[in-house]
Length: 266
Image (cartoon, rainbow, N blue to C red; front, side, top):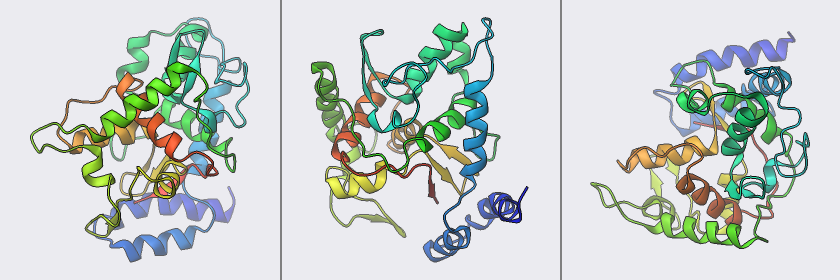
């Protein structure tokens, strides 16, 4: 392992502890120390290994998984998700498509795949998280271009917009409560107006992302679920219509911006 990678690995351990008391300036200092790299580089490598590994009852890899650009084509695929897939007659995000491939190609039990898609704070990352990091990295620099040609895709965007503004839960919050106005902040963190292209592009393009405070890579699906948790809503299921719809809404709002995932977050 190179000296640079050793330093990054050390930061992956130290930073989650430091960030518990760090302000925004300290976070920026850590990001500057890491330069162009972040601890997600190790997760990216693990994701490629999962892609090539023969798993499940059928003992096959995911190398023929069709992410939308043809079987086995990974480069640029993430930037065009969510999108409609004719073989399932569904609009799918990356996570739901990966589950489909694991079940159909590898013969895995969908309940097992859904059992723990996201790691807990400080855990080792999951297979889904690693695959998402690697696949997103293969779209680095590619313009965001989610599917909007099919009526199912446009309907999914409309549903996502409705969900974005829908108020519910004990606090009567919507996504727009925090992310639907200019200049909003929570403590030191700018929230961004995700209904606008510039802010949506800045946010969406950098997910999946390595969360310093948690020591793991988080996916966009996890981010949607965590927003539901903060609103005190029922748990958002990975790959559910609501999750995919919200991601479609953000992706369309961010369309045209270059992907920069995996990003680095507090």
